[in-house]
Length: 265
Image (cartoon, rainbow, N blue to C red; front, side):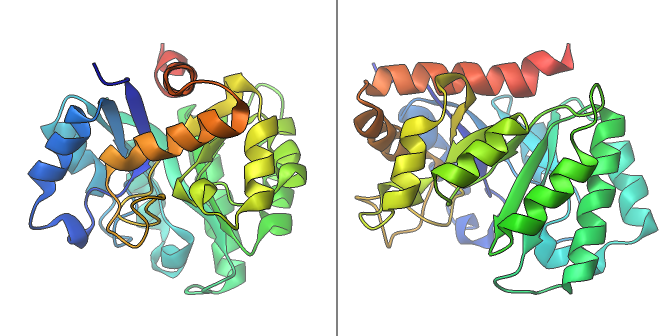
C-alpha cells in the first residue's frame, strides 16, 4: 500500500494540465496523495476562483484564494470585497499565495507590498492562514509579516510556500509561527543551504508540496511536475532527516490537517 501524502500546494488549473488534468489527478490518487490544495491565484483578478472550481468538483481537493504578487497591479477594491466573500466558501482553507516577488517585478514593489498587507488584513478578519510567496524579497517579506501578522490573538498561522532559503531564514519564519513547506527544490544537488534548513525544521512545522506544474523533483527534474511526484520530495526529506518516508508522510499530513482543517472548527 502506498504511503498517504498531502500536496499542500499545486496549480492544477494551469494550462499545462489542460489536456490531461483528470489523468494527473488519478495518478496522484494512485500514488497515495489523499488531498491536494489547488492554489487559487490563477491568472489574477478579476478571476479569483481558479482553486474553488476544482475543489467544487473533487471531494479530496481544497482551495486557497488570493492575489499573487505578479498580479498585484490588477487588484482593486472589488478584488478585496470578493476575497472577503469567497473566504466563507466551505472548501477555502487559506489565503494565498501572496507576498513579494522582486525577482521578476511584474508589479511595482510598492503595489506588491500594499496588496500583500491588504490580503493579510482580509485573512485575519476571515481567521484563515496565509500562504507566502517570497522571491528575492526575504527582508521585506519578514518585515511586513512582523508588522502585520504577529499581533497576539489576531493571526492564524501560515505556510512559507516552496521554501528556498537557508537555516537562518527558516528560524525567522518559525519564530513567527509559520509552517515550512518544502518542494522539489530540496532534492536538487546544489540546494545545500536549503537542505540544511530541512534538517532543523521541527517535525510539527513541516509540510510538503509540489508547486506543480513547476519545479519537478529529482529524478523527475526537467519534466512537468504533478502532484504524484510529491513522494519524491517526501523521500528526500526522510533521507535528510534520518527517518522514513512513512514518518514524513505521517507528520506532514497531520501538520496540514492541524493548520488547515482543525483551525476551522
